[in-house]
Image (cartoon, rainbow, N blue to C red):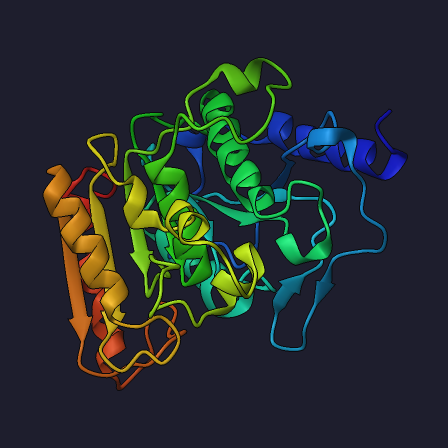
Length: 318
């Protein structure tokens, strides 16, 4: 049975959607929304397995989210929606989600360009969910389907759905894009009859491989432990699953990235090329890891302009 708190969250979310004005009549503004306009619970009939997690979600002083007990989508509605949508996953090594430094700035940036942005508050495997490493992927696949199910509400074109991820969020969005037909959870309702495919994916300083010698990441430790088998390492590497089903890709990484070795973007590019998947990659001379939408006065400040050009080429912005 749905708990009272979950029920009230669902009622409020649905009320917000019902009261939203038709998108084509949205008031003209010059700035992107500062915060989410609405939230959508992912699992209104209960998380797979009807699990519950004690406590409440936590936010650090720097705006990182952890201990997600109720995964949701935070919706950033543009002043002038253009019909395209983006699902955004911040990084954090699957130990936390960098919302303030990655996910929210990306959502506002996209909304300013007419893209309806959905920030994913996903479950973290280390919190003890029975699904283990599948928990974030379950949330990502459900989120894609939920966006499709609400396309009529937000005036979206289901054929223009982008996945955008940073670091471990890049790993998550990469896995979701590469494995749209993988059944990570039992279907719950009619929403789960919808496709989990995205039409393009942008992976920013992503963790792509969990294989040695590029396996010294929190992503690998949290997902498959300290001594995984070669099969586990391969099964949880994005490049393993890249085939003709993979949508066009955009990727950025700095040469001096101390967390996700630059080899990650090389492996992504090679796998995409072998599968005939279009990919645009950019390597920054410096920038380290975790630069989000770019840091002023550094090479990382350039990548959003390249991204916008790529989005225009693929029909996400005008």
